Length: 512
Image (cartoon, rainbow, N blue to C red; front, side, top):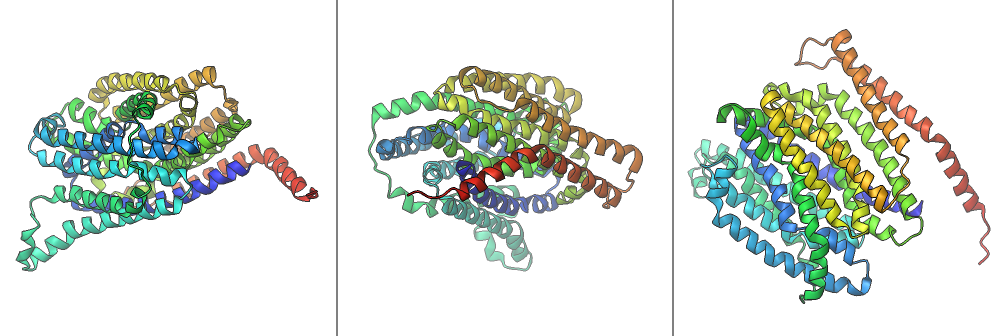
């Protein structure tokens, strides 16, 4: 239980930083949806969907490889130096290629009149990638506070520059301060969103300057080749994984929606804004991953590691199931974060995206088997299969159902990916997951939401979408409390057993 408490403590710190960062960043959603129409907001989300897709290529699995090969403390400095040199050289190369082929890339992402957007996200990727290994070192050495401080500070800087460029500069120009045009173009409103991100990414990189002094700038080719053999399949894992995670907004919807360019941008804007309402589950999953990945590698040397992984999975599923209900049943409140009612037409896809994120989080837990057994190629095969499935389903469903088809395809792909990863994992690295209990917990959450949706629609029938309907919120609260109580009753025997064990241990005399 000490290991679980350690993971819980790290997850809390990472979670708080993630919550603060994301909530600060999330304030930009009502800000953007207030300033931008869905048609203007669409291109912004196309770019921000492409960035994580390319980030998987920029980092080519080195973060996970750093955790894997740094378990040997004697080799840790060599791994740090070799990984840092590798990622520095590749980042310079990738950025040069993006800048050189900016027009070709702009044409491909359906933004041919804005090659400057490619320049912007190239520099965002440049600074974010250079910080990957220093941030990984902070996580490996259990320094979540510094990690969190830098992350939160960079988000604050991003918000301040957004406000400066999108609100302060136009206000100054409107009030006769013409000197603002020396650095501000009032016709490039969207571009300043990306410029603010570049400045915040560069700021975070500068805050990591002390970490670079720990790097021994020596390159060990043999070590690098071992790292590459482990990490290159992770490039495919990350690359193909992003097909499910971001390509719906970056490529599938722009290419498969059967309307004109303006209508497509409008629908992408609506879908992207509602996609962000799944933020609560996403926050927890990201916080969990930050603490869990190094933790899982550290626990692998202990005999009871597999039992630990199983317990972690159980509590993870309980938490994300509660979060699913909390977001899905309180959508009448969450929708007001999307300031313009034009965005509300896409609210019905949010439960599907929440379920998709649940399956994705479980998949991240399951991936530990191929990372520990050095079978990263198996992870590549899994994600390639689901990426292919994503192409097929989006090609099939988007022309039929619009962005609902994309949301449904995302949920199905993550469900299939989760199941395939579990089946293969039990073959190569069996972990005693309580499968029946885990499935029951998730199915029960979906049933509770179905009950809420049916009663809310056919019995309560709220008529005014512009006001909060209190009977719906009361129903949601009753169902959520009931669900949490049922989970408590399910887990109560184990908690009592654990309490008895801890008391017995505390009363045991010290014979030293």
